[in-house]
Length: 149
Image 1 (spheres, one colour):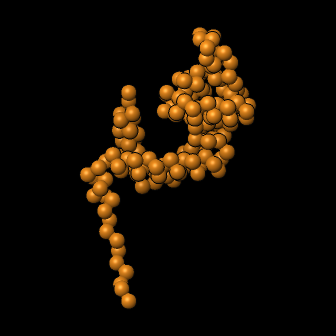
Image 2 (spheres, one colour):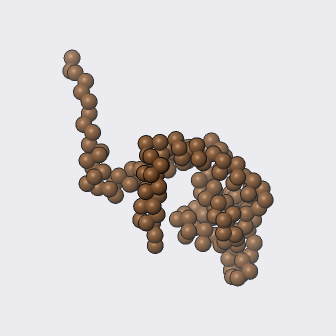
Image 3 (tube, helix red, strand yellow):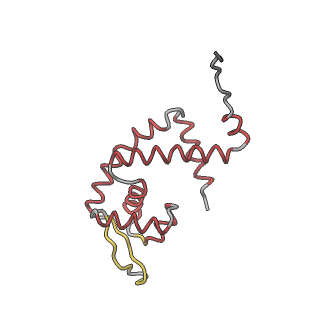
C-alpha cells in the first residue's frame, strides 16, 4: 500500500514570484467570504457598499457610485433597483443634470446600514485572523495604493 505523503507547499513560492496571482487568489477568497457573510445578514456586498457611500457623501448618480465603488454600471442598476425596492434608497432626477438620477439613502436605509455595520468588526477579525493588527494596517495601505487612479 502506498504511503501517504504530504503534498508540497508550492503556493508560498508562487506568491513570492507572482504577487499578482497571489492577490487574485486572496481577492477570490475574500470575495467568497464577504458574499457568505452578506448572505447571512440579508444585505449584499454591493448593496452594503452603496448604502455606506451614500451615508458618507450624500446623494450620488449611479455612474459616480459605480466608478467610486468599482462596480460595473450594469450591476449598479440592479443593486440600486434592489435597494429602491426594499425602501433603502430613492432615485430622483439629479438637479444638476436632469438626464441622470441622484440616488439618496433613506432613513430605513440608514437603519439597515447600521445593523449591517455592527457585524463587520467580528467578520473582519475572523477573515483576517492570520494577520496581526499592524499587518492589517499595512495591507490596507498597500491595497489602497494599488487602487489609486
